[in-house]
Image 1 (cartoon, one colour):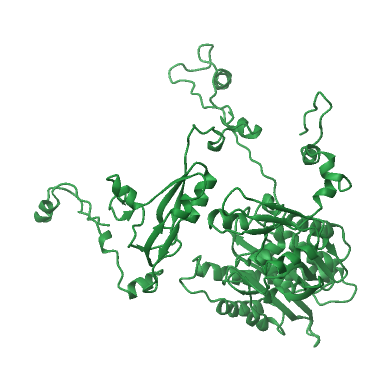
Image 2: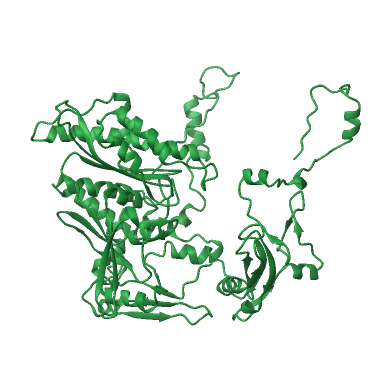
Length: 611
């Protein structure tokens, strides 16, 4: 497919060239005055709202670290906005100072390959890392480099979506410390190190190195000081042969989804020095995501493997150790306890099958005599295959429309002019009506051309007001008071409405589909039963003002008097039951029917339904 040629000599070429053709050369070139201006430090202050933020764009590493030192860590670094955007929009987080590192800071954005390691800038987009690793894996003759670049490429191919990978960075993924991150277990098992940089009062940059496996202290907490920055990630190169790394991931769907369980595994093997013709596992490391509040290593499982013979029995025994090491309680967040443990165990055996398949290639290509790889039955070999390492298919689809079935008729008999063949009837039917023909979706052309109108595209009527719910920020505590005056002082805010306003209008604050057991707005003096319970609504002239007003409503809460009940076991122990939810729906003279006993004059059984 090509772009249409314009009458004035406009762009024409493949769709892949469109991004390069749609921007002027002044923005794309690094040699123009525009590029030089863009590389300069920049400060932008938002004074349009009471809680406006200040944006900094430092042009050097020293300037960036100086900001962190000046504000003692009171700055949020934003690169792709894939995490901060969620926090500010959905979690009502506010950051008064935001830093966007300039692309002129080369150490933050570069991806380089040295003889002994891969150096990845903390702010390099994930797609850049993926493409560089793919290029190296496809072109290098260095087997060790290929075996370290290929797993990174394979894992990043299925990381989130293309749009996210184009802006998100590896440093942000590490500092966010998500327990279900795809890359963090991979980096931990590879023995990767983080280079953390800071600056002193004299402007001298100092650096310290922390192993990725030691970086995650507890849930969403990492070993990073407020004045420090993750500058780069160092990944050591493995040996040419007999060392293997493989990624593992399982999600509800392959594309654009978070993992249920993810893992990275590494093993080093060597021929048995006793001459038995087998291989001994010399070293092993395994890291998992989705099995604990942080990315976790499994040292007990690694210990069960090291020194043992490379065979199926060794890995089956280690799988039992792994199941004990990755114990999950029944009430663990995310649920699916047995499934997640089974996934982790299956990854370990899948890793064994992967090692055998790669070892067979090493044995064939080795210049020295190596013992043969352990034998694996043909029906197990497919276990080494994974969608992570398979070619990513293109998106496409085919829909077939069969010709309509047309009966000849029961009375005519034969195929005369008055009773033509079935094929003739079917052909005539296709020419006259749409039965059996493919038809475009009514809105398909509009979506493809960008002309489809959505709700946000429809002009708002004059004097339209916007609303934002005011939500409880604590639970299991009493709501003491609500003060709307901070919100009402914001320009554009019209009013804040609570349960008292409903009562003034004579309305009811109680609601529910069958049993009226919910409140519209939590009244003052009642207990907030969950975080996010609605306590009011802020109405303003713009959505931004409504959101800001809702955030500024001051709610006072009491102290928690007892522990919150979050599991069934806790509810039973506390004798906490929803007795009022036991409702019976009756129709007809139920008591009369039951009083007659079994002789009801009807067939079948009587069924009582209560909820």
